[in-house]
Image 1 (tube, protein in one colour):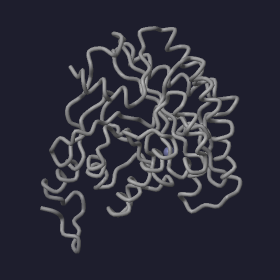
Image 2 (image 1 turned 90 degrees about the vertical axis):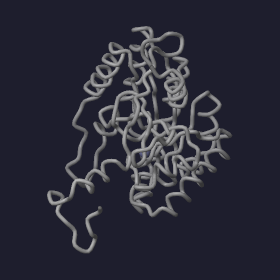
Image 3 (image 1 turned 30 degrees about the horizontal axis):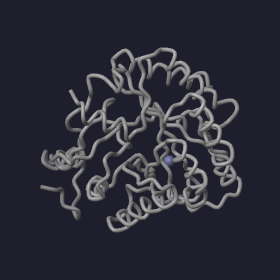
Image 4 (image 1 turned 30 degrees about the vertical axis):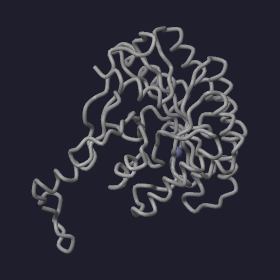
Length: 301
Ligand SMILES: [Zn+2]
């Protein structure tokens, strides 16, 4: 029983089946929490980098040359600095890459793949996928996968939606494409099965959170009041505390950073020192998102 569209009811007037049907569209099912991680490690660290580059400007139909140059910084300085740190520590990570970024910088994607990292889908041009009609969303998801595979030589098995949100069709399309996982939703700290209208889909969610995203603390908008409000030391402290608790509980620590946000001299140390800290603590296994999802699925307690 849906509220009729021509005579919409206010949410407080909705009949129970209506609000239940909204909540049940996409739901967290069974938690996939392994007793331990590969090598018997008590904690897993899943580092990810969203290589948005110029697409943050392009998806708004923006043509600001200044903003586009900040995007290019992500390629020229951000990604190389990140890759150097990952290599020095011998740690794998996942890079979620819009197809337009991959087409602008194919060499970057080839290097990321060659250095042992995972490349995942992150939309076509960082479009607001949750607002797309079904046919357009399906077309862009398929084309994005094909571009990433062609450019990097690696067939993506996972996706992070550009808006960290789903349209009513996203989950069905993810299943239809045979992707193993999504990493855009926030219902848990552990991996979990995604349910569509009350039924298991076989698609695993590796949850993110804005709390563990650098952009939330560092973004600025020149023409609005938005300015970075947290010093780098404060961001490091939040990430470290998220990790410390994951380690204590024997769980998963997932992190998202952006090359064009954190790839600066005053910020990139956060990644370096965080990995150093995690390694110093010991008993931590570093995996790509795909590796974490596969282990969690195979060894769910
Ligand atoms: Zn993004």
